[in-house]
Image (tube, rainbow over all chains, first blue to last red; front, side, top):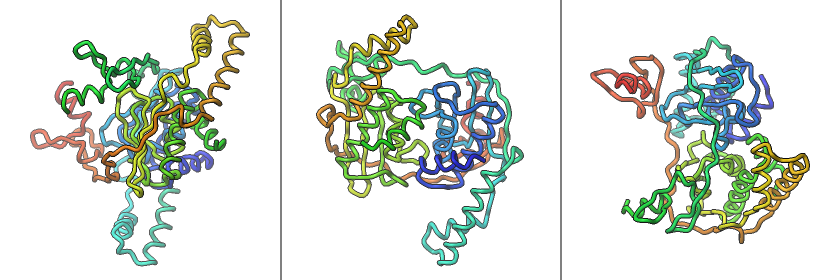
Length: 197
Length: 197
């Protein structure tokens, strides 16, 4: 495991948690299977099917970041990541195997800590178990995941579009995100206001 | 300017560019106006109205990251950022003032470099001008931006929802992202397949 990358993911996310570790390990295994390293520009593409903690580790590790045009979000509420390499024209889909990281004792302690009913020793026990759990995830093997090459159409590279000025607020907006109404050009927020939404 | 934060933003994004610098400076000025520091958990909330380079700097600087539930994306194609502090119950909206960072010579050279028609000296000139332009943005004052406190309803903290298993693919999905069809529970991708989409 690359400790430095994990530390960077924790720093970016703000704290270490099992969700972050699952995203980290998923991205790491998918990249290993693809035989690729971090994407400085848009060499890699990631399609994430949730917006939870793991996506932060994925951004740090893969270089597929929200602002670079190579990060695609599908709001499916599923811990599924698809990572593709443009150069190799290959994509890997990865998800955690059912119950692979199930830890009932940790769940119980988390509940107690969350509700404020945990004793001091339970709090300590929770922290130690959480740390161990994260370590286990980070050191887990492919057997904890379902990992497979998939046949997908890799999304195109990001396109830079020109901006136009909204006739109401005077602010620039990407042309493809404006509407023409009765001869005026409006950005989406102004258009919504105009429509009384 | 905090050089270390800028370096971290560049490392996260993969390269330095004017868009990244605008997002960085916007976030920095908004945070200064709010009197807040980076969000380790969900103390801050960011609403971004584009998914371009600047949002990566904002994630790094504010700690409002895609995977933490305190980062909200409105697909308006506008370089507008609203940053709110839960503790202070205040929000600042910031956007670049019209033409503040307009640089026709840089645009011309970027066009030449992009199309492959730039001479070697133009390529060098472009790189030097781009570096200077980024520095100017990072050192720019509030006069280059429209920055104001705004009255918004700060989005609620992220809620962790339980997962259920999809009766088709057997993969877990967040309960609120599943549908019940003819007595079976389906995740959204399986539901779409079922509907023949």
